[in-house]
Length: 410
Image (cartoon, rainbow, N blue to C red; front, top):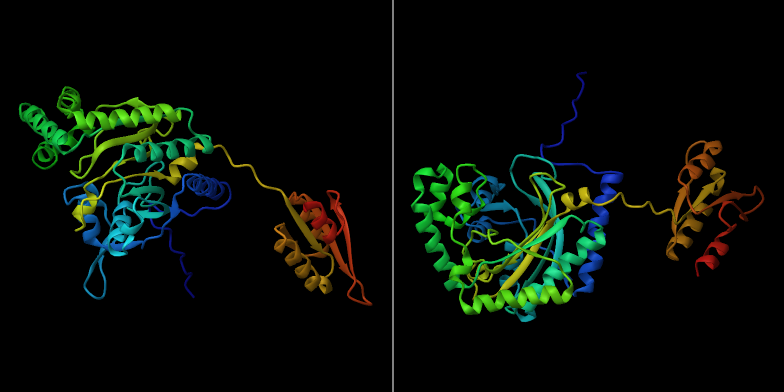
């Protein structure tokens, strides 16, 4: 019989165990703890949506829609897409599920996302993000709360050192349009020196030229007019309120006037938490205010602000999580005592005490296996030949029986 070859994992995906899984879990657990401090409720949305949810919200000309989405036709002939980000799906649910009644809606989630791109350090085709959104919130105080949440998360993960909050404003509609026209005039004057990609962006989305990494574009982009020269008084007051709020909350920030969001529905606050510890992929958390997104999905004007962070990138930055050894190992000396061991383990677990039941393998080696687990206490369990009485003895810690463990933990 021919040998069956085990299929290899799909490129850009990952299997996690041990320290890698512990790092991942630590990021998620910390996020869930901190989000509750800020009153963000858990939300779940489908892992795939109608393709229009993403093509409308992200824009047909973006790289995500044109090159990176996993899109397929189902058996009913509908075009579906695996979610490449969270915000569009949450915005769709806000409209279709009647969540407008809860505005301002503060929600958070985490899970897998999918983009077809070249795998590299901290970047995968199936990757995972944390996400936080406030929908139906127009005031700058909500931007401050969201940024303070992000800042506290990074501090509690122990990765804030060397991470800089870069902050900018995209202004209101009038500011953004005036700035856009000034950018078009500037880039048109240097069209012949621009890269082909930037020439294409000039007609569709000139703000994205400011993000170009092409060496031909950088001198032109660096000399482009800044948004402050076109700022309305209302937009300036909004940004000032955000910066004063961050100062009051003790959140350190720096202005990056070149930080942009290319899509038209972005307004006011744009931000990224950036580090140099991950090479070229330095953004660990980013977001902004997207006051026009709900309208692109057919809803009314609804102000909103949110951020997302890559779990894999954060996991790479944190220290190795400390292993928790606060558990009891129960060693079943003889197979006849299996059910007694199960009962004892169930009693302790229901009382909130972690238990590892060692009841398989050679009886001689069961103690050795238990010792290698390094538990807080090891209880051995035997069953006499004449009845169901249990005998416990402690090989570690100060506890010798189940009742003693319960009393000690009370």
